[in-house]
Length: 258
Image (tube, rainbow, N blue to C red):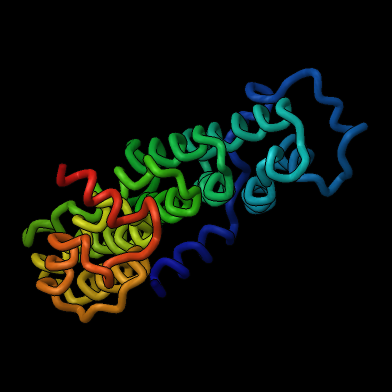
């Protein structure tokens, strides 16, 4: 965690401007000088060459349809953020866009975040890992049901071959921890099954501990950190202590077992 904060801090120091994507994604129907003040993030993105300022401006692009905006603004914001998140040459701008997309309910936001994680990022391995971790955290934040599939995939990936460097193994673990943390927001059977599987098979204490915490949050149950107890829960979902919420984990498990 300390290393991640250090990397993010280094990004803020001395960065150049973001890639020039503005002319390609904005609509000519927008009269910025009439609609926005000089502090508006859209004007910063249009006029500034400072990477730090542009990255901060991207984080301030809140979803229009959640805040009284129009459909036209929604299309513009989603396009700007998606372009910055997936193709900008400045890591700080990518991070700003990725962070902002986490607050969007628009399904396209979740798809863009998945693309960011899966694509071949152009930065150093350390920075690439920071961006991917933020993409996973933002994907969790969207709350989109389909987002759990990528989180499950990342959580279940191998910890890394022993011949890999320590840095590579640490980056993989950091991403797995982010994915396991994200699964706490999903009580579907495949999410719970993944967390129980990690508790059963994972040797790393930090990963098991995070899986246990996510299981408690996802199910609302305070079972001990013993894989057998949680496996019993998944195999006996009709027990009263499993869940009392309608259409939640127990209902999905019962459907899956039919």
